[in-house]
Length: 112
Image (cartoon, rainbow, N blue to C red):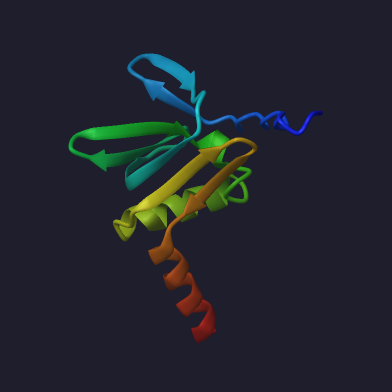
């Protein structure tokens, strides 16, 4: 590899969404920011404000959020507290961030 070549980018992890009647996988890095407004067994819907929303497949979040039950618990907690969640998709990485939820859980651990 010459000094001017970059290493190949890792593939994007699978993150699918419903778009109308179609099921599509995201093909570019992106961040979904918003509140959980609907949680089902198959999908979670996140609103981004101004009438926009994204419906993601729960299955694609299982590895990230420690399995089906934990994913449901984490997202249900975020919905109940109306937290703003950040789901970030980059090459080779998928992440979930919810600072308010992290703070709540830290307080619970401290309280023992």
